[in-house]
View (cartoon, rainbow, N blue to C red):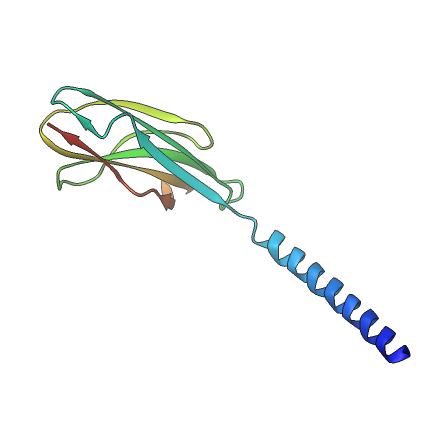
Amino acid sequence: MQSLTRRVSTLAVATAVATAGLAVCSTAASAKSDLGISVSSRTTAVGGPVRVQANGNSDDFGGATVRICIDEQVGRGAWRQLACGPQGRRLQVKVKAGRRGTLRFRAQLIALTGPRHHVVDRTSAPVAVQVR
């Protein structure tokens, strides 16, 4: 009977130690970032407005300033930055569709780690708008 009691108490102690270890590990990896982007419509006419909205936040860079930016790609062209704002806030941009084809938008979290030194923390998946 004593052997069974000893085994149960050993199991209880081992479980407590494992639980404490998991708690320490989960708090050490608490740096998080999230990012999302949406558009008002997936299709629009030439000259029509498209509202693009991005939300994002990050604590991966400690005290460094992190900005959220919205980029645009027309057709297969290069990405260009439309606007930037502070992290943790909603950034909204209104764009006029200039020509037929596909407009793509993405959001980026950019950390300002030094004078003129930027680091991209995260980039969202692009969302597309068909211009007809």
